[in-house]
Length: 77
Image (tube, rainbow, N blue to C red):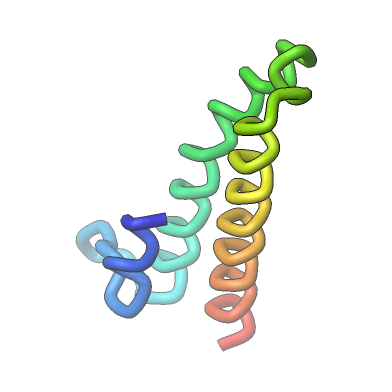
């Protein structure tokens, strides 16, 4: 979340990459980084019943939704 907030107006883009493709790639990479820990949560169903896990899942959903919206915004531009 901090990385997104810090770089959302000017994401780091690879050299010689078009701005639209670079911004979409950046958002997809961030989404991939947060999906890996969620796969671990899914592997252990007993973790999802914990109170703190619910907070983490809600935060994941919020950030994933924001990243997908960012990607769609750049795609439509």
